[in-house]
Length: 158
Image (cartoon, rainbow, N blue to C red):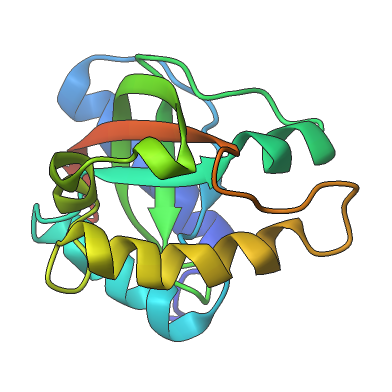
């Protein structure tokens, strides 16, 4: 028997989630955290461990890519870097906050590194440079960020 493709795994995850939750969802967005393999896989593991409960993109990224902002109640599949689905998260809060007003408490919700604001700034400042590369936007201390909190509602069963 051949292993399932990532697309088949996503469809199976949605079917299993529907059975567990009595939902009737036919499709969900699927994406990975971050912009590189090491960080994407580490962040996915942190979500599975219940440590990472927030993620933050610049509002400029959403505008440059004509993407809708997340909303409370949204469901999404998160994957590893290779696109293998690992779980489903539900958005619990979305707040637009300037970069220079991110708090220690919010940085801890992101769950990365030592969970400090200093660490958060150290890794996110260069990330926003990469995220905005090739757009009409540039990072600055007051740039608006989309601070999305979420909860893990389903894990891959196999």
